[in-house]
Length: 208
Length: 161
Image 1 (cartoon, each protein chain N blue to C red):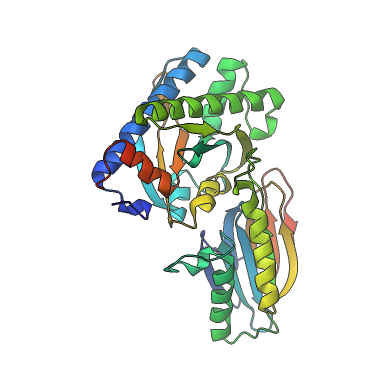
Image 2 (image 1 turned 180 degrees about the horizontal axis):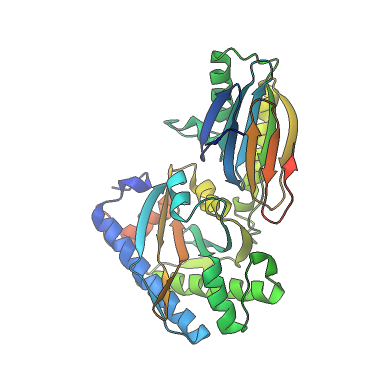
């Protein structure tokens, strides 16, 4: 049976997606650790199926400003992958890579912006590579896009993209732990419904 | 100033007399401030997509077409007159520049703006002011007593409209 809405996922399917998330974010953390030359782990990843307004509260409120790196997936899986980078994470990246920190996003220069895009892109690509290898699916990624703005509007991008299909947003993702300190950096995978069904079938857990 | 009443995504709220309605972080979404000045009746609608093509139509407020019609219906039920109702809109921005021709992603904001214009014209509702497009998210506040709107954006001055 294929699902028609994210809230129809069974617990077995959610467990499988969590496992995918775990492997994906694990690979992303390793890649990040190598670039920044710091010890980075991940927290237990979560699969969440949320209503729109619930999702925005979950990420920390609509008006809070964050940096977002967005990549669109195409090929056998369609969807959006987002790296939502809050200031604490941004400063960890900037201090490790460029030896500087910022106290506000307004102080982001060209160099800092491209560092954040690159970090976001590397995490997303490693996540997707792990996923496509595991499931045996071919996924193409667009060039990353970058925005600094209210996170409610950033999160609304995957919602609007798939809003015609579902009143829920599904995210698979986790947080990073830098040298023992938990730092929010949401890595969110939002596949469209057709792709989610396809992925579950490829992994052998869909019941039909 | 009264406390503010929050309107979520795919949501609408009405207030009469006085009070502030607020909806946060409009990206490609559009916020619409409906106002009947004689009744001091105001409604704030936050729509996400241009056209309702869902089979079940469970959530009319998610879409510009069904959302606008539902808001007008509720205002008229409170005695508002279509000839007096005016609308101000904000939103329809493009948050990310995606280099993918097949994607509708960057386009949703513009499609929302076009759809809102079309529906308002069809319903004979006067569009008083708009702050739309661009690449910046907007928080929209609406004072139902005066009909005045205010837009808050990151890194920009507030806009009164």
